Image (tube, rainbow, N blue to C red; front, side, top):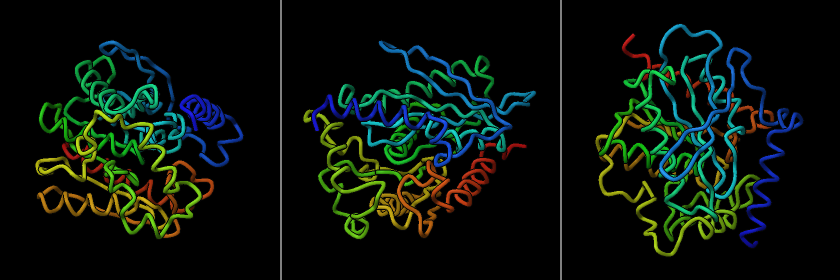
Length: 298
């Protein structure tokens, strides 16, 4: 596919994800949450945000910054409404999903810069967003899980402090060993992600001038001092071993990390709860994890 074809396909898929019919598959938002669109001004660009809040809130709430999947070349914040609205209403929290810039127009590391810069700006203006700057977490799926992990690594060095990170079936290796994990070969016929799709996404999002190790959290030498992590994987997912290996590395470094693998679940299953029953127990686990870490002070 040419770059123009990739962009056109991504825009078409995003329009489909926003349709009424798609809600049968992607799930209906929680009726106790409201969803608003907002913009945020960052150096040299303006990003769209999808903000999920509980309908009834009389105090500052924890902040969860969320990143959608799509291999850095597609996806939209709206595809996570089912999960994000539920977390907002039930945690409760303000869940802000970032429409980060996409390759090939905006290759790595720009999506990661968008994620980190948005986090910083939201915390800096915590009163304006109605959030508690001392209770912040990051959440991401697939490529968005990779962004969340890298944002947590950057925040460890430069702030703001995070209380938790949730990585749903993340890709954690964007180097030449991307497809060398056993789960890639075992689940090569997965309908929601194929090895060829992984390779295309890497080719289109990774410029030749960028060291892939710098955007591959599983390859980082020091993984200590990070916030507690919940890594959710799917047994039928080609990148299941990306998450498993990252948890092993986190634990080796002394970081609190929990790994859950859901049987009979495919890649992206939390974005398609109408097709994969495992999405509901996974959502409950994520909610309990975030509630425990973000409201631990009472």
